[in-house]
Length: 449
Image 1 (cartoon, rainbow, N blue to C red):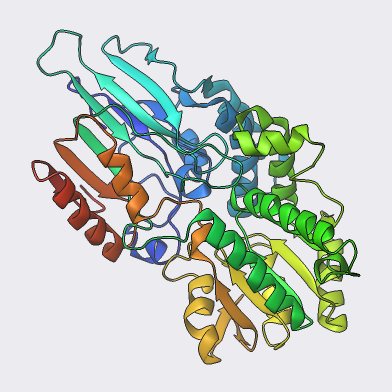
Image 2: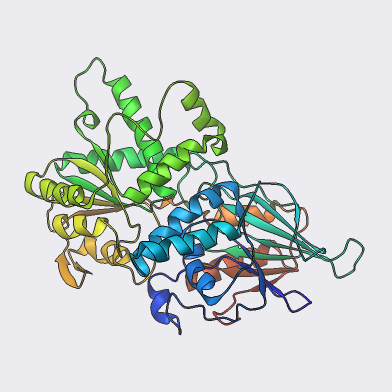
């Protein structure tokens, strides 16, 4: 965002994913904009598509502050360390140098507290709860002096969470703004409610486990994994209570395998930051339950253990619920499970998050039900596994939630810019917001605008 002085504020600096990578003129990692006017980087949350290019920004020479919520500042070094290891180098000295720079420039902020940006006396910043992942925020920028006719409020939604998501409080609309930049990941569809998707999750798991094989859940290390563990703990808890007098339940015979060192680290962080959980989750803790660490949960850390588990499940066909990174099947440990188990008809793959166009996850979604194939690590893998999608477990707000976010403002924006979604999703959300705010200019920016 460029100020009248010519100086700029940058909101997020992420990696492209899926087809976006192929369509990007300069590739996914390079800093393909003039970063020199940028005087502050504002981070909405630490998913890789919002922060993945920060190492390249630092390498280009950016030395300004990086503003983030307290929880995001806590989690961000873990994300960046993993991004550098996977995408750049395993050299410990280089990794440590990047992390040292990052920590020096990070400025943690609490929610709901206005900050006058140093060097910008007429610019105030505030983070508000977004409910997407732990620490996620939407950004309010108040620009201009108090009595100036040019003063305006700009809101950047970041990624908004769905109401009643596990663990996290739901976002509340700001009082209003002049310009709104809003995401549109699910701008063209609506999710099931919390009760319905919880019931559907249990139903799908029972059906999949009755097939006698593994249930593979590609899950993002931060956010989705923790939400699923929270729901799985409750499914196991309720199953144990209801089946106490009727023998062993289906779930009592199954382990939940978390195969992602990064997800395990994030889960530990989630537990340490339990003060940011919602009231329901804190009540479970108070009753002595452990929503993110329960008896049937098994974590896999070392790579050799991971390879052994893949081969064991392939060889034995033992029922298990496997949560493994990465969420769109384009990398991470889930790929080895898919290569080994997709050809087995006893296997079921359960998608609980958005699969970008051009990713292996989208290909499995599209072609798996037709008995097709997917290319993984350059190899063609036949799909005989069952494929299920639970869109309601997305950490993103759906169309009605996005519209509700705008409707809840007392002062509707005069300009709305719709970003961060497929073309169809952006256009569908634009139509809804044009109906809601007929006086507003609704724009769908191009990559270069």
